Length: 544
Figure: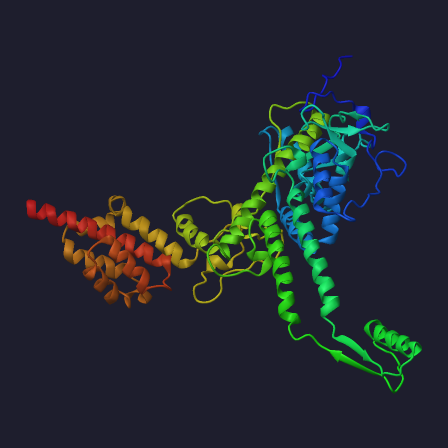
């Protein structure tokens, strides 16, 4: 029996299929991968924050990652803008491009589309995009092999603190084994996503690096604001006692003043008095706290979303409104492009290799927002081309307009009113042209090919050679039925006034919008043939 070729991942690590069926990085409270976290934010100051960041720079990211998670929990603004950026990508449609045109390529792409329809995928992508804030993320692929084919049943997020980077380059990710030793993680088991907000090492490329300092400064501002509000925001309670008051009376008054501050209720002897003195400039004194907090929030908005208008109600002026939304869309596109490349490398290619072996080309996924299309202009532009014979698939039109193809036996809508022709009222699988469009098409054909039509007319029309002018009128009169004769005067006026065939076409289209196109075309065709033959006969008589 021949052995299957050894599969290697993009790092050159060999694939061990037995490891794929195990969950190798599940959390446990008693091991190195504990789901519990410390709180390095308690008592945080610039000196301690600097030490935490230096630890991360040297390859120990535990306290930095814990701090990054706490900031998301305690700063509503940072949580909001970061969540907006991640959710904008999770909601993008995902398309699949086949790796080739062979049937197997089509089958693989179909299987991939089926997997992408999972409802859990949006939540899994959201977790992968944790790399935007922290610089990178690790997601374990839980492979299912129960049906004899490898299937990514789940994508489970794993905490960054459970992984490290190679101590030599600080760029190659490694995992901690059960003994806490650093080792390469198995091939085809993890999606390693690095989402850079700046160039540099993974531990220094996340937005949390900026958010930590911003959060620290805002925490100081909010603490001072809280102290000021508690101290000066409430009226001063001043208790007064008489000159003969005893120590017991004084203590009673003090307790009363204190309790009014917390409980808003107290009792005092009748001989005592409490006054409430309000500060007159408290509002003006607190404005600078609010302005500083708002300013710091705007800096985070710029760092995360590239602008402030969509989050901080800043409108008007240069670069606002539409321009700010375009900046956000540019960031969304960049995130989606990075994520698609990561998933193609760490999920799609391994999946195909495990089930079908190495392929010349692999299917690829793409996350992108559909380009807005002016469907009205598209319909108006396609109509004339279809009338002139352009072949357009009905499936293409249904897809463009987002309309499902009618199932067999479904009630079909048809044109109504005076413009509806008998042909349009009959059920058909084709996109029937409106009567005026059909008339326009056939009239164009007639005017463009009048010489050919003239050469192919019957012997009856050829008798016009005997007396061209008189015979042409007789032929037209004989061919016109009673309903058409009423139009003759108007048509003759149009023919006389038209300076070219194009002008005649426009006059006929404008003058007879509800015309029976089939009957008129037949009449005009024969009339034009008679006129052509009559003109030739006149030339021959004059030259003879």
